[in-house]
Image (cartoon, rainbow, N blue to C red; front, side):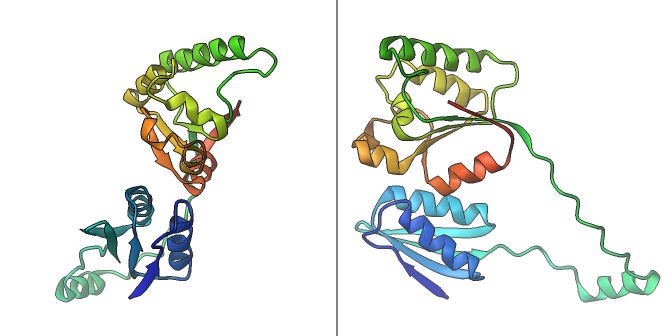
Length: 210
């Protein structure tokens, strides 16, 4: 079992260390962290890669034990009978999975840069219009000052919550909220790593960047 000691490492470094172990082929691993945000993001990464994860909390010292999920096996006798009846069919050619939906990447708390007051009105109106679409965007990713749109006291927070209720994945950059010191004031979406944001954008059919 591989041990990833990310104690004292903030996100996204703890996630990056875990991803590096997975990229090397680790199928069983323990990840040690010391803050809930890192534990949540590492757990989400592992589960997204098909791992079963056990999280243990020992007075603030968090340990995630992960192992690959296994598919139920077919009994030998049953498999042998099937093989006797007919030759195994050729494996089908892999078909690329189509990308679907739109992703919106928001990098500021205003729409436009010349007039801040007008920009705040416009971005609020933009998010309100998004939340009224019959088919809302698949993902809205907030980075840099865009994360401030998700704060409890932001006039745009309710629109983001409406999008969440309609199934939109709201990703709030963890590095950015840590930089601004507003982690505890986020009222919509999930605090995410840059890797998760890039992965979500890459899996979308269209990307609209503001």
